[in-house]
Image (cartoon, rainbow, N blue to C red):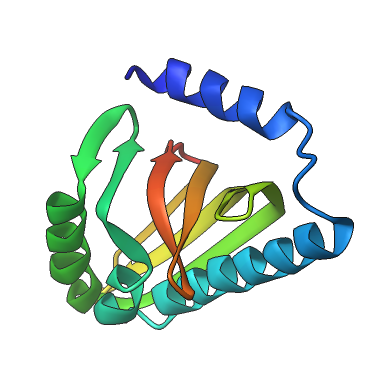
Length: 152
């Protein structure tokens, strides 16, 4: 499905009223997904490839700057890139959690990443990110993502 259709579909779902969730349930899900999203950010900050990958569902995929990346490709990229960094400072602004149902939610934010390579080179990028989280058993996992990178 083209990226813009996925985004439109998610907006339609997110805007549809849910009669099956109480406000208490909705708040609990939002808190759990907010916690999972911040855990993902902390794993990035720690440059811990295993912890980052643990947040991804096996059927995960992401569009990075318009290019579809599979779970296997993302895992390989994460495992290869994290050891090359001496620092990774992900800053996320305007984090919003939108509960879609008992087992799904969307996290969206604007990131500003500062990456320091082992040789001292610094790369700074910014852009919007959307993560779709799904409850699988007792865990919340990312099943879909979209991130666009720009120079600040």
